[in-house]
Length: 126
Image 1: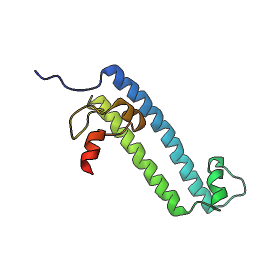
Image 2: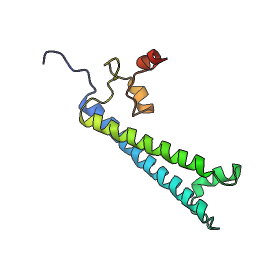
Image 3: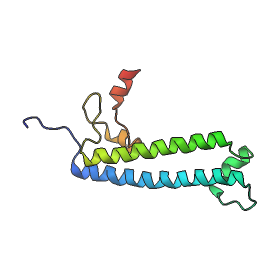
Image 4: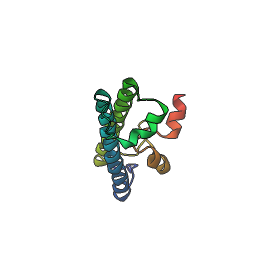
């Protein structure tokens, strides 16, 4: 065990965990809204139970089912990515670029908490 494992400190990991947990809560809530809006499409009730979608509605009479299910799928993937990030936090591998093995910039992780690539690695892929 001579080499020092490059990783974020437990305190930093705890911070990231809080950010991610919060994002999972919000994302799950959003997913519920998307699903309920989707359900409301079927029974176009006059009572609007999803005010959040009012903004969308004014632009387009009703969000098409396709875009709605696309939205839901993307949201589910986002939640899955965030949950995977939590697992990496538990394993203490969180924030380590899977290509370069270096730490991913903290600012990047705050913006994209489920990132597994550093900007460097991302640029290499282009």
